[in-house]
Length: 341
Image (cartoon, rainbow, N blue to C red; front, side, top):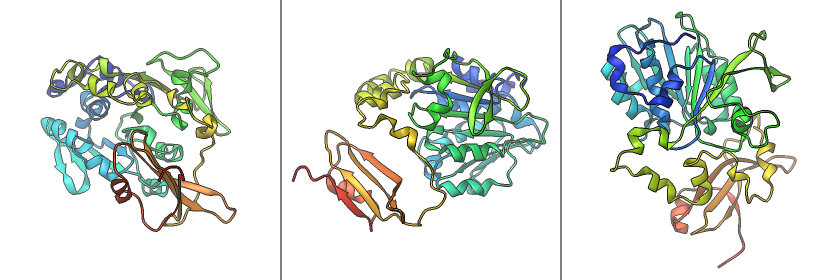
């Protein structure tokens, strides 16, 4: 993928050095971020503009969040797109959640909230496939949507994603860059490597291996984003330093392994699987009360073999029981922590 000089109309985007690494990256798949405040969403939105792809007839991009609410929420993807795309001729089509450009190029915003929603895009052709906060998606959603990454506009199809650290499937996917227990030599941030899928598992191979894809992970943290890091009115670092230790390690320092500490069963995250089908409504759940410590609730359904499938979770602190109750689904048979009143 050749590096494209940003058009003059795009200089107002002013990407910082780490964002430029993403914009200029030649890998088929590039994952950016790994900490809060590093300008992840802005990089994802600005990437096709800085490369001038919005001026290419037939160019299509879709940027996904897990839920529609996340796309539309204040300060989210759609709000940020409205700050960027009109400056380069983009016209908002609010009902369709997409921007259209004079060339005929389109950048759309979509979601895949439920596992089966991925099939809504079975016939799609997406040149630039973007994922904001990739760790919110399941592995099967990500892999299925990558099969829609194709192009007839003359631009080689490619995938870009942003994320915060998470100990689930994504840490395994990016293991050579982020996993402390990776057995080989760790890859450097921005270093491009090639892989193939062998019986469902990733196998790293040499450049030029038939049917291989190139991938990289670009680590970025708050200090890489001068816009936020140096603004005295933001003081975002203080906000992150006020977080509990685990969240602080993840969001401020980009630690991918911290959530394993203190878990009774640290191997639990490696045992998660996706159910092929599930009832429309959950029927069973469990909760543990907390005020200073987090309140947590998990719920799902019990299958005919007596196995509980967890489908959703809720994890908050510093709220009252009535406030928690208002956010939980009704009609659930709850099993509650017996400690306390």
